[in-house]
Length: 152
Ligand code: RBF
Image (cartoon, rainbow, N blue to C red):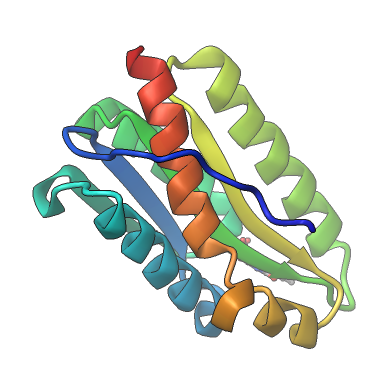
């Protein structure tokens, strides 16, 4: 199976940021909602969850940095959806965002979860953001695990 398994996670007392691109919001908003559900299920208090919308995936890196610096979160989930189109934008944005998120992980003391879907088709994007296959839930769980690691 492809899915990640999680030991019992406890989000109580952890501050979690969720940055969401509005581009392809039919995909990113269900991912965000599943992520928020995972945080709630793990006991993260409502007032400890900081959601920040940004225009597109390219901006999620700045949005994550902002939450780290301004809200002092223990982890961030960066959510976006890139769908390959006719231009080279897909490649440039995907490369920039994955490098940017990696940089935040290595250069700040805050883990940033890579919640950016890179899809060849709209069908792939829908499949990865709906029902049991909605990846947002596991991203929320990943953020709690990594935030706990940061605090340990
Ligand atoms: N943002 C996304 O989140 N997903 C996309 O699939 C996407 N495709 C784009 C394609 C083109 C041709 C352009 C110009 C932008 C695209 N963006 C996309 C927006 C991008 O992430 C960013 O918001 C803008 O380039 C402004 O910096």
